[in-house]
Image (cartoon, rainbow, N blue to C red; front, top):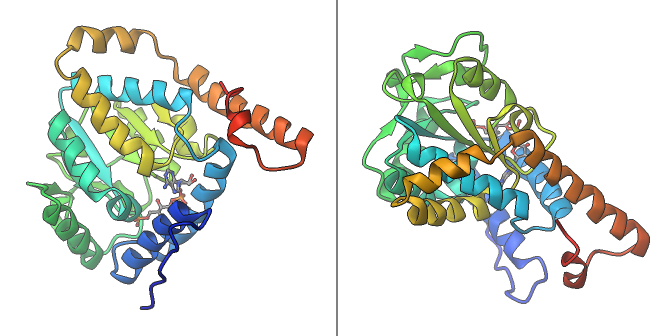
Length: 267
Ligand code: PTJ
């Protein structure tokens, strides 16, 4: 495998570094081939939101942290892209919110599962659920391999965090009465639309923010309950879409990519 050296002064250096990470983990067998396509789709939406964590995303992150901290049984569902991009942060988030980590792959193979498990364990994960025969329970009405879940994890969880997902499982989990927190750059995706709390942001930015916010809120459960009372997902999702619309309108007026000066006008 050839890897390129990214010049730090390159205007797209950060985006290229993230892309290299995905490609490297694809070669290692962690990221599915379709994961490369999914990443490209995410990059396109990241351009539209301005490649930064927006106000509606921060609002959703705060609510997600409050939800994770007040839940009975929380599970962080991990796929190939998430494991590659935010390995350490997933383990930190599990520690701070006392969540379990469960693998749940669309392109399931035992080989990939073991590689992702090893990656997470090297980053400090004590336990990784959902590997091989451990995923012996089924989510009803779901045809894909994602239906296979661990009876100690997703099956009995009241809150499931699904960073970077494909939509049908989110819908099925919500039907089972679970709260689903999604991190998805595309506010129009089925996952984004069907989740209980949708964070429209890049997992690379949202996950460390979620760790930080959970750490701050951990000692204040009263505040967590107040936050939960004041959140409406549809309204917040609408604000993310409006933000893109208004950003594109300003871009259309100028005919050039928006500068930091324009960012001041954002929601
Ligand atoms: O590892 P596996 O086998 O479970 O497969 C994982 C993929 C990602 C291949 C699978 O879940 C899939 O096909 O997903 P989709 O349907 O392509 O959806 C991925 C969604 O994630 C899209 O809406 C993208 O916009 C979004 N996305 C991509 N990269 C990021 C992202 N959202 C947040 N942060 C990202 N870095």
